[in-house]
Length: 96
Image (tube, rainbow, N blue to C red):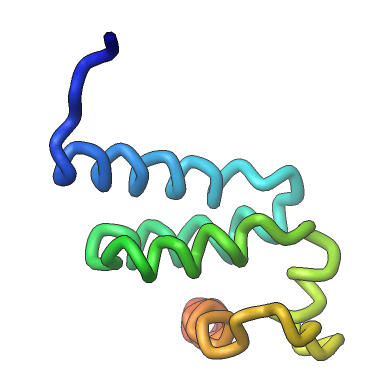
C-alpha cells in the first residue's frame, strides 16, 4: 500500500500540481495568464474552487486564450464566473 496522506497534504500537493500545470501549458501566452493567476490564488482556494480552476485548465489553449482576450464568447459549459476572475486578474497585471 502507498503512503496515506492527510487531507492537508493532499490539497497542498494538488495546489503545487495546478501551479505547475498553469505555468507549463504549451503556449507561452496561456503560461503568462494562468501562471501568475495560479501563483496568486491557489493557496487560498478551497477544494471546490480548485475544481473550477482545474476544469478551466482542461480546456485547450487556443479557445481559452480567445475567451480571456474576449475575442470569442465561451460555450455554455464554461464556468463564466470563474473565467471572469481569470480575465480580471490578467487585465490588472497588463495595466500595471
